[in-house]
Amino acid sequence: MLKVEQLLGKPLRKLLNGPIARATIRTSFVLGLRLLVQAGTLLLVARMLGPSDYGAFAAIAALAVLMGTFATCGTHLVLLAEVSKSPDQRQPVLAYAVPITLISGSVLFLLYLATGQFWLASTSVPLQVMACIGLTETLLLPLYLLPATEELALEKTARSQLLVIFPLALRMAVAGIVMLQAPAQPLALFAWLYLATALLALVCMKVYKNDAWLQPKHWKLPNRVQLKHSIGYATLSLTAAGPSELDKMLAVKLLPLGVSGLYAAASRVIGAATLPVTALLLSALPRLFRQAGEHSAQSQRLNRWIYLSVLIYGMALASLLWFAAPAVQWLFGSQYQGMGDMLRWLCIAVPGLVLRLTVASILMTQDKPWLRAGFEVFGMATLAIAAFALYPQFGAKGMALALAASEWGMVLAGVAFIRFKHQVSY
Image (cartoon, rainbow, N blue to C red; front, side, top):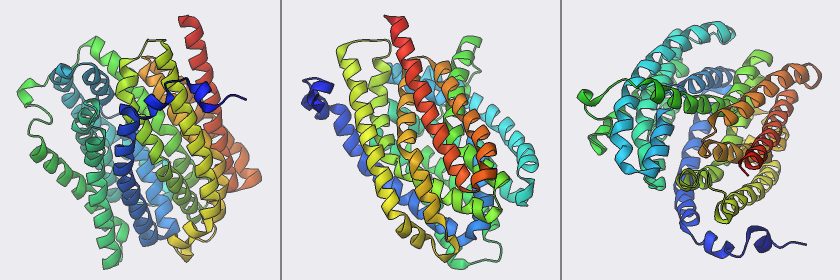
């Protein structure tokens, strides 16, 4: 039987003590803070709104986040790739990244309002609530993301994540304030404060980094080559967020509003628990970008180490969540009766979810954005078809089974794409 050292090669110890492992450990501490912030916000908002209103909120927020991923037109990933290779590329990329984000984000905001009024009409969410959340996710936070991504490209992963956490921490604070005040319309007040925290985060970013978005005199529109390259990465952002957000949108259409709230809360718990995998992948991204196109033993060893680490974590996490499900339900309160069972069904998807994130990241760094987009579009199509097929027979559990089918299907498709690419390269 092969030992782990034989599987990964003799330099395993050197790799585990290398810069990626050290950066992963540092980033894990920061992402531990992010986990606390996300978990705290989830608990506060869910308890504040109750299952029905939380289901509606989760659906409109999912739509805003999904559309917001396209707001930068992929320029934040271009910035990550180019600055990882050469820090001198910062200004040339930012010069067109900022104006394209402003233009694209504004158009997406209007599109979001129109889509939300049509797709989520059954939620009866006020327009002002949709506007506040949409403006935050499609315009303000995408602008904030650009300088945070620059820090990641410079391999300041922990600092980058602290910047990302900052607006989330502000959001948790205002959720706590709203919960303590217990207003008659908590969702409306929270939505306005949701917008205010994003504006405050932008002001603080400007204070922290004066030239975060360059001077307007340096802005310019991208040329055709730059736009085509960026849109390829934008497609990655959209399709990457799709499997994680589409299920909440489908849930609010297929399930009763209260049950969709239970599903959304359980799904958010799963998402928050995968943050250590995000730490590993974020720490490895700059090196993976630099090694793109290489087929050295070191490159292959790095990929195998990442796959194995993620698989072990995914299996352990699924087991932990299975046994912790009753405790998680207790934390959310008596209104969320039945959430524990939903969380246990979602455990089937957990190893597939973390492996899908890994396969997607490796495909992205290999300069094959359309391959990654293809396998994620396949996953979203699988999710939609499975949800409509399984819901009539299994009810709410059908959504969890549909998500599992989608995640594991994407893993198989992604691995097949990577193996095909390697065979063609050789």
